[in-house]
Image 1 (spheres, helix red, strand yellow):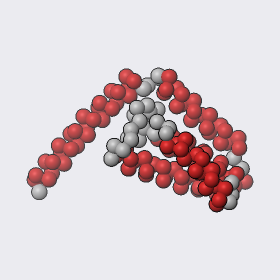
Image 2 (cartoon, helix red, strand yellow):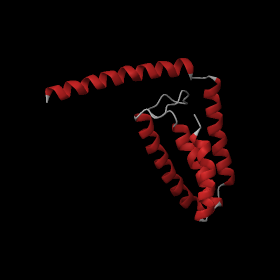
Image 3 (cartoon, helix red, strand yellow):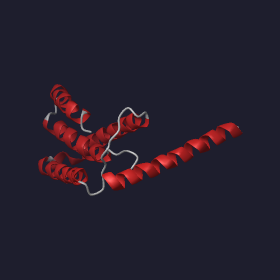
Length: 139
């Protein structure tokens, strides 16, 4: 049991070192750069567009759907980044999932508007298929 615990302690120490490296990278190469401002502007623009076109009579239904889309996006992103299947060189915040703004803004805004304007399963699926490649190559 002692060997397992010492191995875990070593993993935690390496994760702390990695976190310090990531934070230093974020401060030096991300914070207040053009890409940082672009991400921030994109987030603000997405929310303004979403609020402008949102059917406020269906707010609860659309928010529930958006919450579901957000959960799925975050879970898949955590899995992918944990297994280093992909990574993100630019981030708005130095958090575990650098694509948090896209997961909390991009996916929900686009898919809630698609859900609102394409109520049929076939139409929504077609819209989803058109949006997926855009989000796939977002980094």
